Image 1: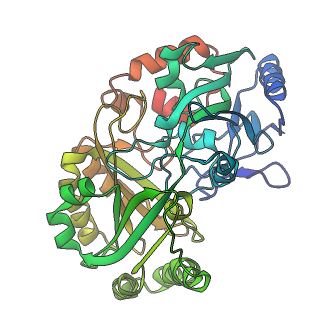
Image 2: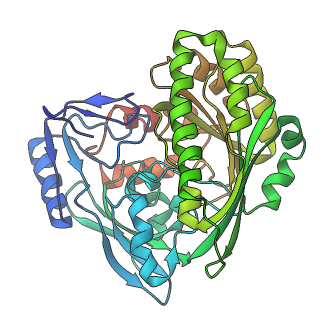
Length: 437
């Protein structure tokens, strides 16, 4: 978000910048004018959405485009269940736009505050071994290129560019709209419960394979996994949503309020963290309910944190997790934040963490006021030993030299960047690091 005085900072407070200009284009034409004007002044230009990335991927020291006003539904293709949506539209607003047409997004992550453009450009994903990240739902896009022209990518125009543009890291141009391949609206039955961690790890491959959507959280210093198993059901299924009071207690009071207290105590009395984690694992997440898909997939996150997430080949997920456990045991200070474990299907998006391989994801977090450096570095070493690819929107230390070996289409992506943005109008320090200058 941009504050008075022109200071922009992201949600996790890991990045901040004071741009030379901040603009709020309400139309595609306004975006084109902004890009052309920035080029005439010799200023780099970047678009930002919700600022939910933990990296500097959206940092713009030149011209910063806030796309909140570039939001809403452009058109609907009822026959093919496709919707065209402006790039600044927040994920949590999309269900209401789709509802009149009986449609839903195929899958979502567990946070829905991001813009659709930001979510796909950083490789945001949910969980489910048969489902890809959000970028795999994109079948068309329009972006403003470095010279201010419009580039359309869809079934009929430039289709060969879709695997690059749909997950473009903000390096190829300014996305102004995307076309989403939707599915008929559906209900999700959720079962959340604590289970012995060793039991979950012993049958990890089966647990992910047997469910439509399965994930688990592990509170460090405990032997408990908080499992989440989601089953897709037809839209006309009679639902049993959580009562409002129960949901408030679970998601707001316990999930956010109590966890905020845990994080605060962890800073002043770190020795208490293991006992508090054991208590949290007992009282958090033992429920069953059903509701419209988007209400189940996404949860409220009120505690500010910092995050690193790596994707490893799914067959190496168990070993990578056990390596993480060893890091926690050997780390100098107790870890107050749970670890999240998910999976996703292989896909064809050139810069996707799941490109060409079914992937398991391990995400580690620290409270935003705690220093994550040593913990994240130790975890990153484990993930890299297992062929891990870092989430583009989450903290990591890799650069172009190391990333090139992980992505078979890396050089193809850089070549497309050279073609679309030869003057590097959309560059910033983060993109220079991960793609090269």
